[in-house]
Structures are given as C-alpha cells and as structure tokens.
Image (cartoon, rainbow, N blue to C red; front, side, top):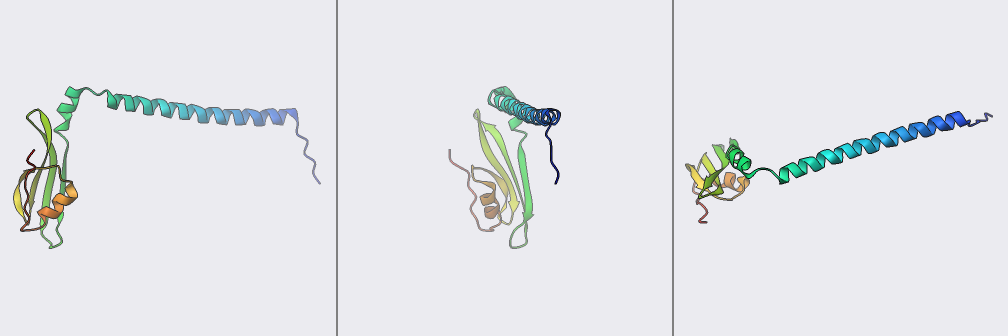
Length: 125
C-alpha cells in the first residue's frame, strides 16, 4: 500500500492553481459582460440620422423555382415615403412582374408570386 503524505507545498500549489483558474474564469466572464453591455448600449443610443442613411441599403433578394418549375425573383427593401420607412417588394414570376408596398412576410410573398392568378395588392395605409 502506498501512503500519500500531503505536504504543505503541494497543498499550496493546488490552491494556487485553483485560484488562478477561478480568477481567469471570472476575468473572462467580466470581459464578456462589459463587451455585451457596450454593444447593447451602442445599439440603443444609435444616431437616428445614421440609421436613416444605412436603412435604405438593406435589401434582400430571393430567387428560386416555384413548385411548377418556373423561376421567381423577389427583392425586399425599405424606402422612405412621407418621412416614414415603408416595406416594398419587387417581384417577378408566374404572377407577372411589378412592385408592391406591403408588410407581408417574404415566405407569403414567394407563395403569391408563384401562383399565376394570384392577386398582389399594396397595403392601403
């Protein structure tokens, strides 16, 4: 049988290693929280003029094949109308081609564009 004699030196080294590990863990956690807080504060206090300038650049283009095998193209973007940002879609597919102002989600718009006889109308407000 082996007898392990725990000495003061090995206990001190073990405690030092545990202390270093916990300190590193707390330090990394604190750094993450500071970075997350700074990012959140920056997003909440963004300059409205800056948002106006960059918002018009955000456009999403979707292309693919409808169930009937015909191709479709849908571009979702926002445009300023009367001082307010409105959602628009440019579409092309079995239903035809055109532009519509609507808040409809892209998945619904794709299904409408893929139906040849579908009615695509703008929101009235």
